[in-house]
Amino acid sequence: AAKILDGKAIAQKVRDEVREGVARFAAAHGRPPGLEVVLVGEDPASVTHTRSKERMSNEVGIRGRLRALPAATTEAELLACVAELDADDTVDGILVQLPLPAHIRAHAVLDAIDPAKDVDGLHPMNAGLLAMGRPGAIAPCTPVGCMRLLAEAGVELGGARAVVVGRSNLVGRPMAQLLLARHATVAIAHTRTRDLKALCREADVLVAAAGKAKLIGGDWIKEGATVIDVGMNRDDAGKLVGDVDFDAARERAAWITPVPGGVGPMTIASLLATTLRAAEARVAKR
Ligand code: NAD
Image (cartoon, rainbow, N blue to C red; front, side):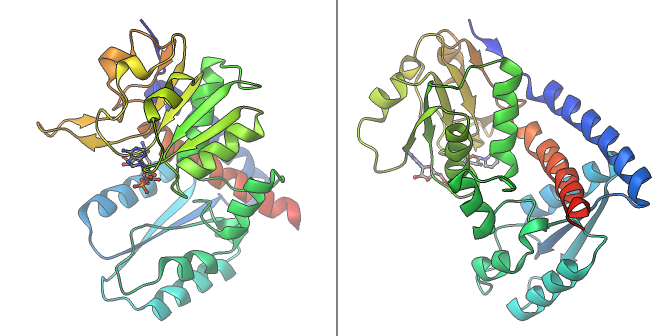
């Protein structure tokens, strides 16, 4: 049976590293790194997510602040808020929680964030730098967390066959770019992919980020593969499950992430690490 990649324990390790880095940064620069999380409206899941981002950043010594704006906030008002945070030198990271209300164009807002502060990695400048394999790109937190899990498992990526299921800008695409940067041979699958099963069976590294419970069957897993399950779905009983049939996949994989307790805890930890990195890069540029 596969070894379990314990996201909870590794996320704790990442947070401990960040706490040390934050203390060093604060001592050197007379202020902690600053993260501003902007929430528009009261979507319950988004409220929960933004509150935990604020709380967990403060726990490692980052000055994390949540700006909760009313659902009726206009695009112009939100752009003014972003412009203010862009101009504030004590702010190192800006995260606008998605989804935004329908009357606001998300791309207009994301494009307005200073790329150096874009800790969600959704600015076209960062996506472009990442796609070109150039240094200095800020990659989205979830794929960064997945890469850390692969590193902790000691998985050799050079020349490995990697399959990423999903092509979103937040997960699938940047995940594929990060794997490519580490010299894996990467295929990206999506809803139009033919014979997903055959493709998955070739994968030494399989990253599932489709958002479909039990999309990936146990017999789709190559013997000895590493399986990273990003999916977060509710099954019929309301239980949180991934995209992979965990119990069956476990019999064939060498490493596998559980859901919950795998990729999930890594995402916020990676956001904290990214915020520290952004702060360090910003002061280094001056
Ligand atoms: P998304 O809906 O934006 O993208 C899903 C992608 O999967 C699409 O590109 C689509 O083409 C592909 N896809 C969907 N169904 C498919 C199928 N049947 N076969 C092949 N491809 C298929 O979602 P997202 O934001 O990329 O998130 C993906 C999943 O990861 C969701 O379950 C989400 O909740 C989860 N997620 C988890 C974390 C975390 O921290 N653990 C973070 C972000 C997202």
